[in-house]
Length: 191
Image (cartoon, rainbow, N blue to C red):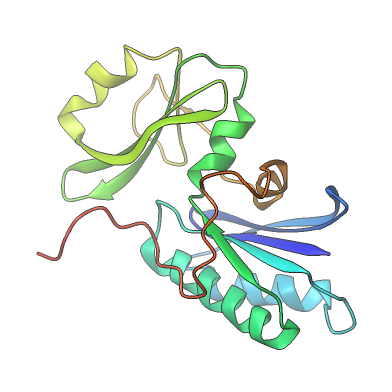
């Protein structure tokens, strides 16, 4: 079994797959996801389940929530002696809209900036990178579709990363990182 976790947006998710088939999924909502995530893991009851590997989304998104997800994945990896692989959560949204020639995925990076990732037919073209909020209108007009986990602009539709989408990417795919100490995507230095 493979377990995937994403806590980068206001709606978190966990999925369990066997032989590339999703056998269990759950979505949860909550502040920084701490209690929701652990309640979900408790319901999943992995005590007797053999976990081959763990996939964890690293954002961009809520820094604190992503850290909670990473800590849970690391703890689960230690308990199950399973390797941890991280990847940008934004790949999930790119895969959900794989039929779109020019897709922009945006999220609030605070301080007057937005995280931006550009996809074409489900493949990452650029990002994640930062743009100024005042560049949003110009940026979305050059795209076929703009998506965000937050309400940023009336021309942007809402979508959320889903842990189950991580199973769709081949192991050789560039976003996977086998560093056992992944970090949330944070594109700027300290203030």
